[in-house]
Length: 223
Image 1 (tube, helix red, strand yellow):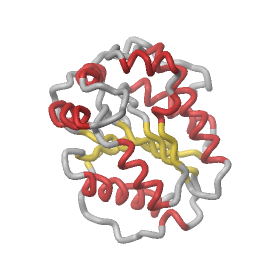
Image 2 (cartoon, rainbow, N blue to C red):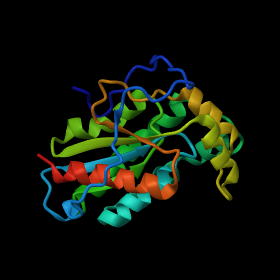
Image 3 (cartoon, helix red, strand yellow):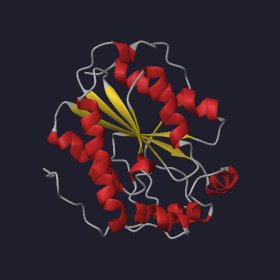
């Protein structure tokens, strides 16, 4: 079992950024009618991590889910240390070492917020680009059997995300960082059963609704 401070190997191979998403469970666009799932007592405290490269819509989707279900929301970018922000502002890709303490901090914050709330979960944004980065968050469930971790991976092609980032105003993430994130990206594998993949190329409203449906469906069947 992974301990709180265990670190997955730093030698995970990098997958190609040109292939389509291949393994995370694909999500149907069918709307889920049960809108009260988050208002019923849940057997688990759910940590919902909205993931993907820059420009995929993590914040837009996460805020929508949190608002609709009245769940605590954590914006992962706000917890980057100043050194990380400086590097990204200068277009310098973050290394595994740069991200490590940030990931551990996000895990701790998510667990804390899920513990000190009467709501059945918390929503967190985190790029979680590599398998081992997702493993860092998963340790939350190893340490507390009442915690269930879910990743909603918003996938889109590099060109689409590049255009979106170029259109953003006032954000430190530059469009040049999109390519570096695609180089780093390891899309969810078949054994990552806690990952669900949603096509993020549609309109913001479409992606928001689809992601919300996924969350509601899972919470409605909380064992």
